[in-house]
Image: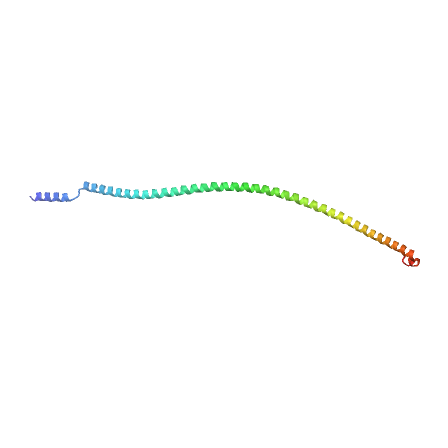
Length: 162
């Protein structure tokens, strides 16, 4: 009976004891639970990262679009300003040519006025001399007339005034 009891105790010990197959099943079950938990955790992290990436991608796409629009607007503005500058350069050139023409006209007018002034001053000098000569002649004629009048009145005084 001793061997029967031994058999029963060993069987009981074996029933409490985990068999190698049971150990493998437990390990696989634990591994599966661990992998499933890690998968869920990675899925959550992936979702957060995907959401982050999507929001950043959307932000960057919007920023790029705004930048391209800004570049297009600035390019258009630069083109417009260049055209305006080119037109102003042409206007400046035309005005400089007009100024040069006006300066030439002013120079010609000054030269003509200088000649006219010279001619006027020469004529004025001639007229002044003529008036002076006429005044002298008139004075001489008056003196001559006075001398005649005096000589007609008194012949003695005429010789003193000659």
